[in-house]
Length: 267
Image (cartoon, rainbow, N blue to C red; front, side):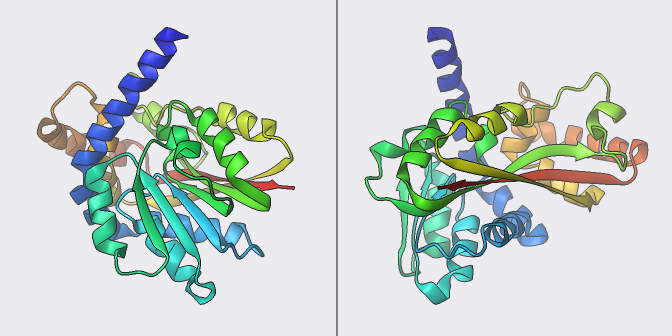
């Protein structure tokens, strides 16, 4: 147990450092490709007909998901609380959303939600964040307690890169290459959601073809590049990522990015 806690703390420290370094590249990627806005809007579609008035955005990053939530729900004037562990990310999020009414940012640990919030929420979103939480089960348990009856947990989970048959594209192109998508296996995540009291979980697959430029921009985000080349300084990773993307595009064509949406409704 002590070893697991120690690993979890080291992983969280590494994640915080990576995301502190990622704010600029994260935003440049989003300006070109609009991935995280797309994920958030799809999550909103999947919770319909729910129209939440109090929302918690867990792992909000630079505020892209928070802004998408606020814009989509603007007609109902929701209160949105957004939490992230990275101060650099939150600085960018406040710049992006600071003038919006009813939006509040908190720096904090997503595995200790009950320490920051006493309020109850209609919806809690994890947009591209759950797979980076070693203590995801505790985070979800606390999130479930913060949900009102009839509330919903909405999660987007990065499932990886695939060929047109649905096989792992990186494993196919580079049999010896290790790529750490995150710290949370999808089987464990689904099992955790199904164990939450009085909840019903729906799972939706989402895959789309991606270009070589999309892959390079995505994998160049420090937090993503560390999954490929964890022991190499960031600037030294970039030429390796360029070569990696060139070879992947030659060996697997087309390449699809995969996400899974998990919607857990509280009875």
